[in-house]
Amino acid sequence: MTKDDKAVPDDGSGQGGSHAAPWRQILPILAAGVLVGLEVSHVLDDGSLLFSFLAAPVLVFTVFSAVHFAEVVSLRIGQPFGSILLAAAVTVIEVALVVSMLLNPSHGDTTIARDTVFATLMVVLNGVVGLSLLIGGIRHREQLFHSQGAVAAFSVLGALAILTLILPNFTVAVEGPFYSPAQLVFVSIVSLALYAVFIFAQTVRHKSDYVDVAALGEDHPIPTGRETAFSLLFLALSLIAVILLAEALAPTVERGVAAAGLADAFVGVIIAAVVLLPEGLTALKAAAQNRLQTSLNVSTGSALASIGLSIPTIAAVSMAMGKDLTLGLHTEHSVLLALTLFVGTLTLATGRTTIVQGAVHLVIFGCFLMIAAVP
Image (tube, rainbow, N blue to C red; front, side, top):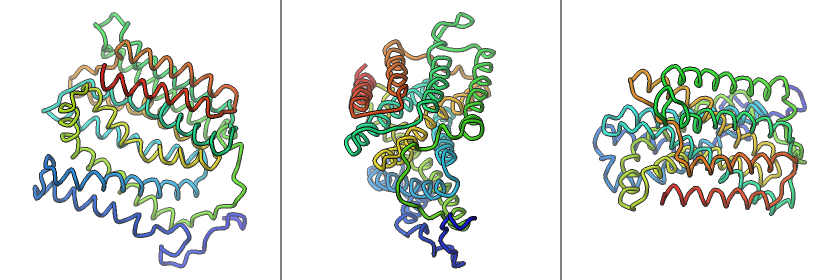
């Protein structure tokens, strides 16, 4: 480490640096572990009101802990690697939740993967991006970023979204909205390949296109190796806790959605919102600090990982189970996805954003919520 890194000296305790995690970041993880233990041992019923009352706030605070530890690791490894790490970690949560619902014999709903991935795209590309642009525009009037990197990310995202969520409605090998096994294998392979090419461009070949244009004027101390290892450990623990709590709360969420008279697809929206809390908060914080490039890296990286990694993994599980995986979107959702990709391309083409673009994305997000709740 060079002298310019300004690393905080490691006092050997693992807790003495400026980035050492305070107990308030660790306590939610411990509380989540206790709750999961009580639920597994049947001391608390996961469908009881008491469990839901305790688990919901613990889940939210555990997400905040995950954000803290992810930011520490990100400071150590730098951008865009920090954004990629967070996107990969959150994708693990999404895949685990979807697969657990597919494996649950009481569900057997093969649309949960499609609904969750689509909801992830809408929450990220319209909700998170829209709010980030609005907050950044209010605080800084206009913000700059590398349009080359952002447009490249959106081109990959657009291709993957069309291939996985719209094209299955128009193939003739099997009646839609499904792919035949051969088609599903092919689309899974090209999805992984295209995502790998993008990661290579982002981290090696064109890394400069994904570094903030407007760097902060202040220096940040680099976490020590021990602090980084400590944060990586607790990042993993917090994400595991989020997975287990969210899975335990899933039956309550489904009953609540049904009791409210909302469409079944709204369960996917709630799952996506919970899964994306760490990345959403990170993106909003970066935009508020005039680090829009980092905010976009986190947002687009999450959406890309959701399709490029989640769909192939879930497809492999569904084929192993002998289940058809429903992928094709309904017509109204296809229209919203096309509108999102079109507006997003216009937003990112100039390398400059204001509150106007943020407002447009938030309006599309509001339409998505309305359609998801009341088709």
